Amino acid sequence: MHRIVNPLLKHIIHRSSHDATSRKLCLQYLKSLRILHLNDYKTIFLGETDLSESLITGDKFPYEDNLNWPAWTVVHAGNSQGWIPWRYRVYLRDDLPLRQQDDMFQEFCDFLSITYGKCAIVVKEKKRLRVKTEGSNQEGDTIHPQAISHPNLLNIKHCPEIARATGHELLSVPFDYNYLHPMDAVWSSLKWFIINNRKDFSLTSLERTYSYQCILFSDLIGKGIEATSPSKWKVAVNKVRRWENYYLDKFS
Image (cartoon, rainbow, N blue to C red; front, side, top):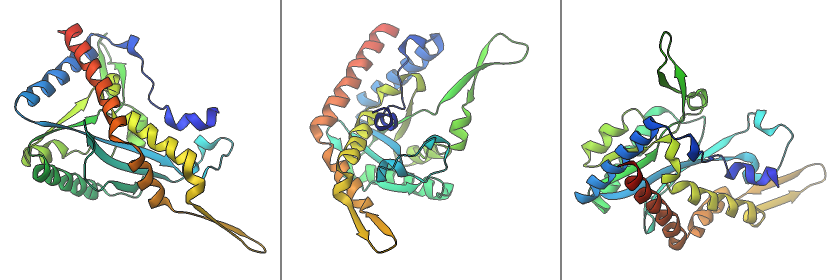
């Protein structure tokens, strides 16, 4: 059972670790989001998730985390009503040039301008470690090594400029409050669908010496995304809104 749920529970909430700095960042984010709402900006949650080869095939190996298995990254977005009608993207994690990332985000912003008008695009902040600087007792932020070796596709250097140029604003949920971004719940639903239905999208060929397994990868991902219904989206977004209202009241 541990091996099955491990890919679904990568983001653990440590609410007790919120210090004054993280609370301030959270309040700034929430106030900025509310101001944009007052100016008729639509909230769009843009997210990504990694799908390992073993999650797709169902094959399990000892010490799997230490093996260099291929991983695919799914990028999609939604709002309070469900998935937006944008064609999601699937990339091979280690085979995507930065220029293509910029082009993808530019296309996404152009689509939002045509479909929704002004939007507040909300993404998740990269993980950071707190370290004390030399000769000082104050702590500073540094990028976590894992964030360097596996950078988020959506933390592109030119994203804020691209968003503003097309009439949008890009906001990042502080890392300590990543559960204020509903995409994690949606991605979990996608991964459970893959686990429970991958056999229905597999074709096996048995020959005299070898056997082959063909997985209809595109169909599996597409059906998994469709299975996340608008009602599931509303549940996830309403939970986020309750936390937002709680923190606005508590931190103000």
